[in-house]
Length: 144
Length: 144
Length: 144
Image 1 (cartoon, rainbow over the protein chains, first blue to last red):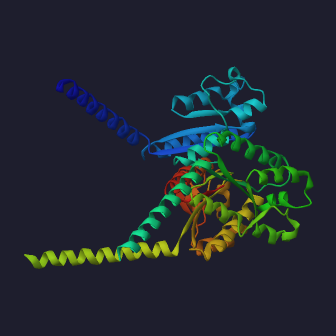
Image 2 (cartoon, helix red, strand yellow):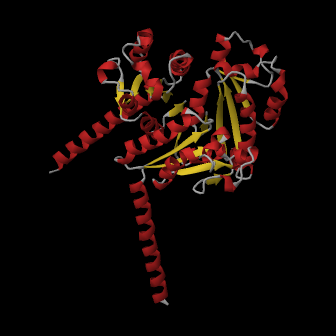
């Protein structure tokens, strides 16, 4: 009877070591968490957004790194539309760098935007504002 | 001598149970706390505000609920003026839903707005910005 | 052997008293911490900024006081240019009141602004957004 118990204990111990390692690694690789919002129509704000995300990630790279999510809501949702090819490369690059680009489903509903109208790399959230609230609640910094 | 002590202990124990229950209930009924600010003159921002507050409250209703305060300062104060009848019903509905609508007294002073000029359901705060600061200090999320 | 040990202990105890006193004093003199951002070009936002910082500091003066930093980035950097004499007195007054005025070095680079182009009382930070993030991470309230 003892042998199975020991085995289970060993597996549990290994699992703990594995989990601790994963947590330690996550904490080590990403120190800063930032949620941006984009709720402005096409114009200077769109160009600035990409620049700002890149700049802040660069500034924090040597200080623990950063995890960034951009929430697109209101008229800002348009930036994630597939037909918006002028920004596709820059947005795709953000994704490749680990940035999350979240589309507000409330805005999608109001503007009659379907999932297939969005760039395939976009994430969807029920409510852009609720998402920003949830991020702040877990310690993320907010940049308007 | 022992009896009073026991009684006091019992009362204390009951009080603890009562307080714990109250805290648990508060945490259960309202999980999220959000302070919005409105500091823009009449226009699209006014319509959006009402919509955004309603949307975020709806999105969080099934996830613990939310307590919302909107701070009106700068040119945004005008939205709380009694003569602004076009928005009265929508603002009154927010109040009925438990939302707090706070007028900045600094803005009132600058714009020569008296208490009787405001909708009777408006709350007043000494400084709109100070109020937003105090809310963030106690863990509220901030939405510009 | 005991005498040196006792002396070390005494020094350590004194150091602790000194540190505790300093911490207590800091906590007593400044209760609130606020980071403002200014990223708008010349116009109403510039006048409002000075007014808002003064108003919130006044409102919180009787409630533990406040430490304020304003981060100037994007087109807002121009407000800190030495040639911008129209605002020099008001900005200098903020400095005299203990407010920190921080110029974003990313914006300086993009706009080809040198250190000698800035008012001498301006502080420089590597990235305006990273600075706002760091402030929020240490409990400062954020005002857009």
